[in-house]
Image (tube, rainbow, N blue to C red; front, side, top):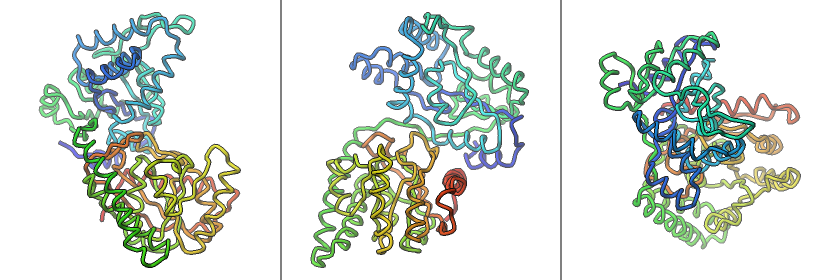
Length: 471
């Protein structure tokens, strides 16, 4: 059994360049298996048979009979539909269900291969409508999958060529490698049905293998990785989350009352954030493991930048940074029944992201806030990400730091997307890792030409997620 850290180190120290291909199987390797029965029941209850067929095909470790039945159901259900209809359905399915099933560990491997300059390939017996949205989010350019026949933009209900299953999947990868003139250096797969695919690689790696593949991998000495399962919330998680929201409100009230004798709003706001975040994290059984905590304390004031994947980041970040910090949030949060009043009390500035001019005007007072000694927490991506991949950074936070004459300090969050998926208010117990990195002096940056500097900061987040600093 290998560790993810060992696999990442081997990629970094191994051959580099586009002549090396890294091939990832999709179901069970990049995305966890979906619970077919419960998911189909939920979707059919909504009257959406097409989406049920789309999602029902993503199963883990299916046998030949399973796959044949799934493919036949897909062909029958989608016959007569337009390509554009299916493309939108696939994107919707990703946003609603599939994103939460992406293994964070798979993203780390994919990104490590991309940084090594390797040609990354995603292969699946499923169709591009199911696989392509995930590939796009992961930045994977090359996708091999079962193609459905199309006549004038309409699906005919048949496949175009052989479905990519067992030998056909391996053949498709081999043909791609020959055409692209690359060597198949790495293959990652989870099922014995992909044995022929694994045999193509110089370094075959099994991921959470089924029993048969586990036995073969042990006999051949292949590396084996274990990924944390992407489980749907359990009843206890719902109960724990309800307790967490109650603790948030109770802690906020206690904090304000505890410092009300001072008559100072900032003292009450600091106590609110401390008591509310402490109580919430205890109630949902989430522990923070922080590296570089000294950078959260000094220098102050500063603009703290954090990557954003979970609704609970608004609990995690204030807890790590302590007092004398406020934030910037999208205007929709101002109307949130729970977070809205609390964020207004602690002085969060709300901006309209759809109106650039109004957003800039709203940010002007933030410079004064920083000059008065209060730090700011900002998510420069502007929205929560669907994967651990760090999205493009907006420049507003950097302009504010330059104008106020303060540094920016990166706050890198790992695992928050596993505690609570992007669009889910339900929290699971666990550990969230946070790395507060050294301050970055932006005083010498040219506000009119800082694209490269901003991109370097974004890459610093990504590199930290791939190579986590030790305490």
